Image 1: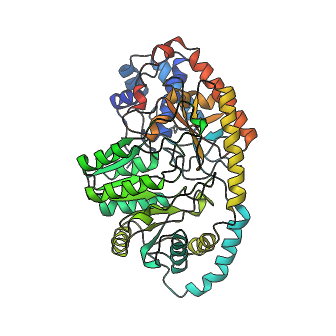
Image 2 (image 1 turned 60 degrees about the horizontal axis):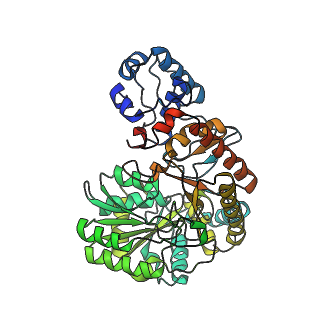
Image 3 (image 1 turned 90 degrees about the horizontal axis):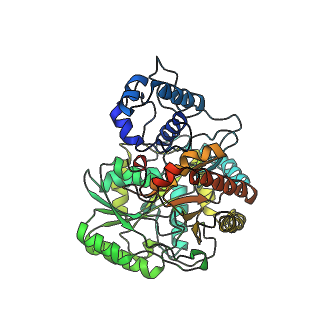
Length: 497
């Protein structure tokens, strides 16, 4: 049964919420909404009663009543009995919201009408290509209907297509080295369940992909974050900071994590590409420490500048690779995979059966066609993304001159350094200006990255122009608050929880 949140716990999550930038009830509702969006307050949890929360926060019950009413209007709180509504998410608009699974903290959350979503870093489907793949899949389905339909390892046609894709990239692979999953997140959960036990250490880059951080925490593992070097002050100049391999080597040898999760291909959120020289060092360091290297390659196909690199598995057969079609084609496909040594694949398959018995067959047949012709939709998509990226960088430089933006060589987003630690505050007030954001601390641990914000360039230039104008307006509101300026020296406690 869904639980409840006591007043003290909610107060600690709220932190310094009353900054004076808006009426108190509005600020309280905004921070609670952000906590729900970020996943720090779970769904279907009863919030404290108005009387109890008012006593804990030392404010009037009228303020709590108004805040809860606003949350109900926005769809983040149910009516419930009395004042104890349960947290929820707004229902989807008939016109639909943004797709994809990369909403940091709340996958699949519908976007209200009139809101531009900068929390996602996902693209709409490559429509005709995906539709054609499903049409072909339906013609192939009858041949599989006599079977039971449970394919714990995946449909063989897809496994062979993925293996051929790796072989073409210089990594000889057989179908027996492939396990098909329901997306990259599913793949990571299978790997964690197989390789890492509770309290085991898992190294991650810092910053890193929020849903991966959440999965590692949910598995009961201890995070070992290793900071990535700061970008050059003029990151648009083309300077490539890369990864701090010395820090990684030190962490591996001193901490001895059982597993290291890395995103070397157009890293999320920075967009960086790890050079082959660093890949070799990373593989050697992981082997020396006895650490299994798990590489997330979901963004590898989004190579905007044509930079050359080898898959990490090309440097060692011990590397575990995770991929998917979510970024290159469509997150709605929910098709991913794990590439590893055959003995490991068998272990992953055994762990997978405790979670599910296999993915949908039709989707896998369609995915086999898409993997076999990966280049078909990519040139046009990459050209559009390059235009979007360049437009966003120009808009940030002209409209937000205090921001430092790192020019990504691939991927879907720009990692920005803000002029002050206001990332969470921006995320709180952003919906008032028609945009939704993922606060910087979602990409790290311990409240880090209040000085940073990930801004996707998945929207067309005209919408990006609207979004950047909204970012400027939101920042102006925060700068107009004397109380907020006094709090800029330390991140809000709500971002640290």
